Image (cartoon, rainbow, N blue to C red):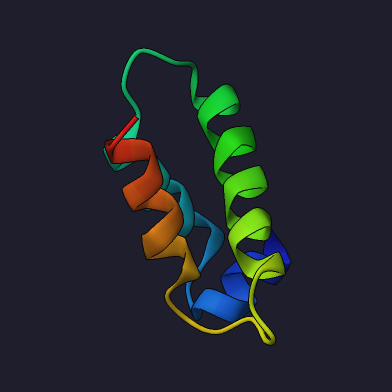
Length: 64
């Protein structure tokens, strides 16, 4: 999570708040784990990790 926060220029608290805002019907732990997997899956498809991947990962949660 520290690496994600560094790339997204946010704190762990800020990131958890973003994740919590899209959580529906799952435990917080499960949602955070799924977010981390989704984040790095999206990042793996890029040549460099840039700010904004978290928004794309959160959007993926909203549409499922």
